[in-house]
Image (cartoon, rainbow, N blue to C red; front, side, top):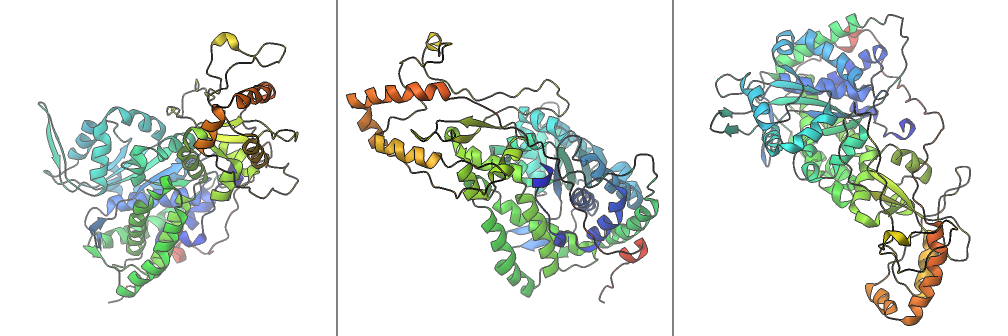
Length: 528
């Protein structure tokens, strides 16, 4: 899947965070976007509740909750966060020792207890959570509804209260940064659900990460000097941000945002499920732009800050596995054809096979071929509601969708391959000859081998319910369908897509600004 991962624009690597990420890149196999999002998340926690951005809906705190979505073993999620953490520990030693928490509690009581232990009275101190077992958290958090409630309140810095016979806890203005590591299949399982689009998990910013390069195992790559210089610059930016109350957006920049940045994000979110991410995407553009400005020791957001924020948000939305999963989920039991996915998401059949091979939530079903044409069977991609699997679970098994006729077990297909003349399976509609011919012609448009040009997408015609019912009541129709079913039932099978055996292409390394750490991290001049 590496070769088909979304590509992030260089515009995202902006301001101090971009310069630090560039300087650290030679010393890590983690992806640059994973390093930068980890760094920004920690910085957003350190600066606390103080600096906010004023919008028409009120004050927006600048906390960043990031999710590194990558395959186990090759995503290098821990590697990306690890080198960013070394910079944080060097820049903010006391904060790193007292306010960095390993693991996000999976119960409401555990979460608020963690915050109160670091609070002064009822006023929360900032915390940075590092959750490297995000797959287990997503599963465990389902058992306690208060986890989602408290996380939603914390994201907006609203007071959290937990009162029982044994406990009476209250935290005002909670402020926390979060970085979580998740496998693609487990993030896809929650990305389109209620807790994502309507509540908790859409408050996180997912970014696809993968191994950026291979470094020698036994050759020392000492990043000490780069980390030292990065930490010094980040400490200066952090001290500045803690003195700022409000980050403003000048009038001319606000007008550019409305005319340029906002329409781009809204245009990208085309399906019903993805459209529910629109409001959070806008909120994150503001938060990211504010963090970029503060890293340069500015209390005003510039157009360039919004450009970088837009590039990062677009990359998040373009996480391909999440987009495909959401689009297929919307179709319900009917699923989607490769043609429909191509038309909606512009993903070709060859790429789609590789993407779907990484998602346990999507199965591929082969249907019938067009009557009398000898063409290939059509393929439909169907969402399967599988439970979240922990990354360390070696007993995970994939469950294929059950595509069988609704009839007694003894009526199964005999060993000689002939189909019994039983009632029509529930998933096959009753249609007229003309309607069958139209559907067969449309579904016969299947992907050619990779060496041949891709076929033009063909829209599948809809069949009215009235036509189905009319033919159902026709004796001639019932007789004709029996003949059709004889040929169809024998060839109907369920198969999973084969993973592309081609060697995964390594992500290209971007050639960016060269120079010493001192030059890269030189503090910008601040206007009087």
